Image (spheres, one colour):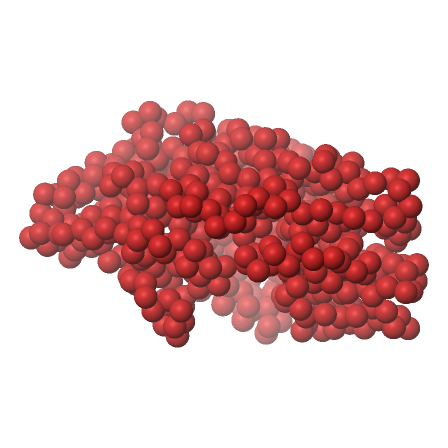
Length: 580
């Protein structure tokens, strides 16, 4: 009988007691009751595992090891979509009190983010159940919601092998609520001033030290002053001379005048009480996030008391702050802009992007929204197809230059997939007169698995060239592109390449790209045939049928944003042409 433990503050003493008596239980995961204790629990488990006092359950689930090496692969298993109906019912999405309307969207977004951390545990339980049956293992210490989700995800038959921890949630949540209100009150009092004179800005940006944002700042700076709010201390403007002309602040630099401060304190007490009454039966780890919503609102309110931007550029579509920020920004007449900087390629539903609320949201294309996310994204949000966020104006211009017949292959999550090696080598063998430009994502390129992948692709293949060139430079060096699930699939298409997704993962449950005929290839032979069919004219590339996937107008993203800000576009639309 395999005994596995889910580690929390409540189950940790039992785990330590078992190890003290020489037993070596398995650890199936970490489920902190309070989010801030996760690092401590992780350190304890890491120490116990390293010293051989506990086992990691992954030893019994080798098929899940790829997730350990690259956690985003968990999305291939589509756990969120398969458990979303259970989640919405368990967390009472359709029974929320109308007195907290302004927090309903926030609550749903927080819940999706909270429960996505449980998906890996569900996959491990499913693996144990399939291998050992309900009588071959037992899992203790689970949170009540995780156990309930397992019954829905795997089947109620597995519940006899699972036990959840007993913990006084309501009393704990009362203490959390009181503590958060107290801390929030102290913070607001500390930011009180006799008078606050707001300063106006054309643009305020959520600064995360991403050079793609730098280009945007420069593109719209003619509209007026720019303010950069450094989201985290590790993302600093310091050292970037090109940003010296912009003002810099911190998200918590807000202030309150006496009247505004009193109103904000009233909001904290009023909303704190409403949230406690409405959600005190939720798990403490989730309720903690809920209880902090009034404080987060106060931080944003204080910020916009001091700074009045006409537009706010946000990069946190995966965080709840963007929802609250939009509400508070409207109080000073501002417009919230956001960008979907990644495509949902691994599955059709990403939990962190399930609930999004901006005034204008820039996306690659409308396909994902029209088919899946329109049900949960803010109904009054304007969806703006605009293509990639990564290209510069020069990249757009270079894309119109003639392309050689060479083939680019881009690899990330399939870096350890033998079928990807077969595909690269198959292309190299079929087109010995062409270069096969092989780019490995920076996450993997210098790792042992990345180096081994490149070696195996190049072994005996003189025309396989490993490149570290920029993505958009590679787009000028090839006519064909093959990529595992990635934004590269649609970016290459947008920049005039005949682009395909390599559909080689046996456990990827769903993919938006599979819904577009001709876009996916699942073997070297199919990839070779795609190229030959385009070149002999027997099967042209169906670009017109892919227009919903990505903006193909040739418009420069910066000009789209400029137009939305009332600035004149600098270039005309210039669609990319494909030629075989």
